[in-house]
Length: 127
Image 1: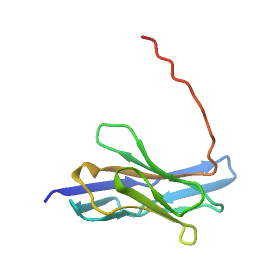
Image 2: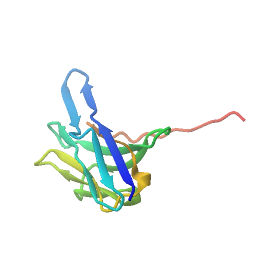
Image 3: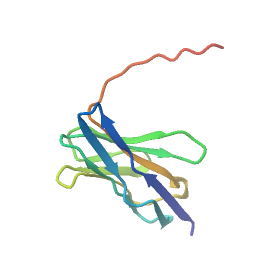
Image 4: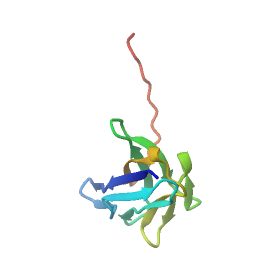
């Protein structure tokens, strides 16, 4: 059986001197057997309903978006079998996967924002 090492970090934000948002992830590393379930815990502190995100970063690659919560159903289904559950009463947004694969070995980031802006952009490349 292969072991899967999943590590993650906490992220802290300070918004314009008005209010501090904090995200904490209590486990620095989690090791599980391939095929086992896993839960990555994320706790936050913020006075209002936050916009919550999970990102993944595989070794040698940039951040990739996994899933987000704005409002509505507290259980959010993401890519590759990941899901997260928002709990306002526990101030948490834990990421889960029922059966991990060795390709899930990566760094995971939980992040929050005070607001979500709809931005559009254009990519222009010179060939």
